[in-house]
Structure formats: structure tokens, C-alpha cells
Length: 194
Image (cartoon, rainbow, N blue to C red; front, side):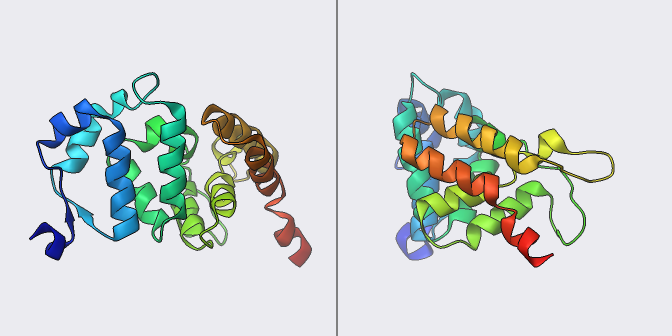
């Protein structure tokens, strides 16, 4: 019945399931994003309750990064990020991205920095480096926000934040360098249009 209804459920109580292996929380998000399933109502509260267990040495950084990469390469990376946030996992796995929530921006932007990031990731092709670039492209905005709504130099600040985050997650150095370059240069097309 769950398969027909496209509901994602743990075979046992989710608190017990996630407590036994906290990586299962990320797998649940990944399965939802890959397969288009909706989490059962008790999954996200269990994730919020146990999100503190999703840290090394309980779960290795490499396993976290693998799950994150697979989520980002899925057909619904925006959904994956929304579920990470709703389950309280985003602040643990990607605190740099979580910090973008509530940071308002004006002009042509229709969402706060976090909402804009979700849209950007959702509109990119399923290439891990491109999606990581979209994920981190505005992480420098919270640190550079001014009262008048400017974010001067956010691309340079963001490049440094992206480097530290990706190195913390132990992505290959060539991938880190590529994503940092994308973040640092993401405003170039805007400058060319002006």
C-alpha cells in the first residue's frame, strides 16, 4: 500500500530506526528525492529529535558527503534540501546554507537567500559540481548583508565559506577548487549584461 501511495516509511519505529543508524535519516531524504516518495508523517519529527546524532564519529563525514552528493544529483534536489531543512538536518550537515534562511534581498529577487538558493539548485542540470556551485553561490550573503540591502563582496566571502564547507565534507580537492571558482565567478554573467 505504501508503494502504491508513494509513502516512505521505516519498517520499525523511526526513532529506533534512526537511532540505530543515523545515516538512515539522510537515506530517507535521498529516497524521497530520487523516487518522488513522500515521507510518512512520523519521519520528519523523528529526524528533528535525533539530528544531533548525524555527526562524526557516529556517522563518517565521507558517508554524509556521499548521501548529499546523491541527493544533489537526483531528479529533485530542491525537494531534498527542503526535506533536510524540515527534518532539522540542514543545520547539521550544511550550516552555511541554513544560515541563508531569513536573509532578505531585494531587486529582482522574489525569495530570501535560502529560497533563492533552492530555486537555483532546482533549475540546474544534474551535474554535481554545477549543483554544488548553485548551492553555495550565495552563502556569503549573510556575512556581507548591509542595512541598505547590499551584499558587496559576497562572492569572495562565499568562495571561502564554500571551500571550508566542502573540505570539511572531504570532497576531492579538484571538486572543491572547481566549486570555489564557480562561486567566486557567479556574478560574471550579470556584469557582462550591464
